[in-house]
Length: 195
Image (tube, rainbow, N blue to C red):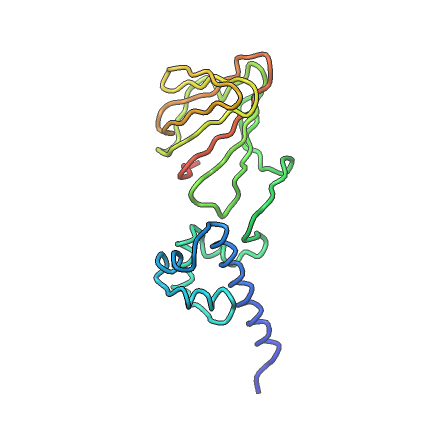
C-alpha cells in the first residue's frame, strides 16, 4: 500500500518546481527550444518538467539552473518569486558609501548577468577622494536627476539628467556632485564584478 499523502506532496513539489522553472524561463524571454539547447534537453521533456509531469535528475536540474543563470538553491527557494518582482524604494538593500552619498542594490538575486545600483549624492559629495576600480566589466552610469561629474582615469565628464556614460570598471573612476542640488544616478554593470 502506498502513502497517498506522500504522493500528493511529491506531485505538488514537482508542479511547484516546474512552475518556478517556467517563471524563470519566461522572465528571461527564453523559448523551450532555447532553454533545451542550453541545457541539453528536448523542448518536449522540459515542457513536461514545467508542468510537473516528469521529474528531472539532479544533473539535469543543474544544467537547467546553469542555462537560466541560477544556482540549484535558487530553483528550490520558495521565498523568491520566479516571475516579475517589485522592489519598493524604501526596501532596497543599502550598501556602505562615502559621507553624503547613498547606494542601493536595485537588481535582486537570482539575476546573474547584471547588477543595477541606484545612487544619491548630496551637494558636494562624491564616491570618495580616490578613484576606484572593480573587476573588468562594462558599466553604464545614467543620471536620473541633477548633475554629476564622472572622472575616468583623471578625465572629467559632466553629465546632466538624462545623460549617460559607459566605461570599463577596470578604468579608475569616481563620481562627484559639484552642484548645489542633489543628484540621482543608476549604475548598470554587466557582468557583475567581485565585491
